[in-house]
Length: 408
Image: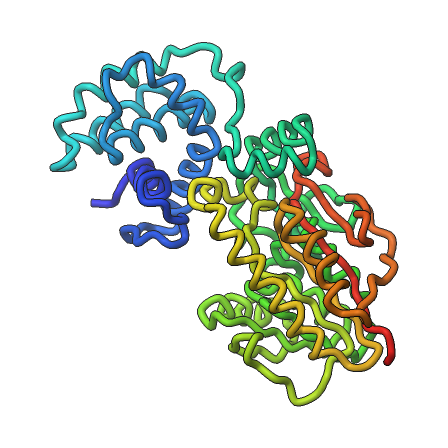
């Protein structure tokens, strides 16, 4: 019997909140693509509203339920109060799922009584949006101030629409054009059913994520290296601009998605599975794009599971890796070449501070002037930063800088 998407969503939520794992890392039961997609939408909506759901549930609970029960009740609460699903069907489905489980059956009666009370709750929209975890909130408040952090949290709560980067000359589905040329499609959609998908006319890429490749201003025939390239949005931008692109990533599994995207769009790149810290090219490159591994704190709109699993120690290790990759990638440049360093992080330690430190380590390194960009702001050391609430409907938080090496 197929699993109800609500039950699968609850397994995702429990995996994140109780096990501290990202949704993509969980071993989940098989499900039809449509059911899995619906389950993931429910899980993401629940994670965006977890504190609100708990605030509504708390007065009706004598004690915290076991994780599988708690997760299903959280999903049901969000589905009714945030997504507006009919209460009768949601409550019946949640209770049936609990009764069917050997370890959860005893909680079915309690859940039935509580969720029926929750269904009558008024005032959901007045509840405060989900706050970031304390360690991250403190760092962001120090960097940007309390009003900015509140605006970030509001953007996170609203989620992320679908942004597309269009291949030159490709047919586009209906949507609204953003200042940088990306196409935004609001509301839930099936990506593979959109006009132009089969023709490879576009690829999915947040508007802010399209800016770093723009900084390189690739000219026809230039040799370009895209480091940490998967899943390939920037690779396709560079190839579409006329670059002879080498796309390198340490994960062959992630590169398979890049290869699929290249096949669909008809764009070409040399794909290499290797660790950039130990790889040596046959010759230098005119341009390098380093999208360094980072905390991804700029992508919480799309990945609300991330705040539940990311820890301060993770960031410290990533900062060291970013510096090592930047130092290594400078050696891949031809004389007079240029490099973009970028991270999808809101933390200055993974952006502005990295460039300041690199300039101190490499006396021949310089920050190059930026071409005009349509949203975001310049940073004191010469880079560029976007914040999650820059565009109506939001965008990823990114840091980027364009660098060159002075002739010796």
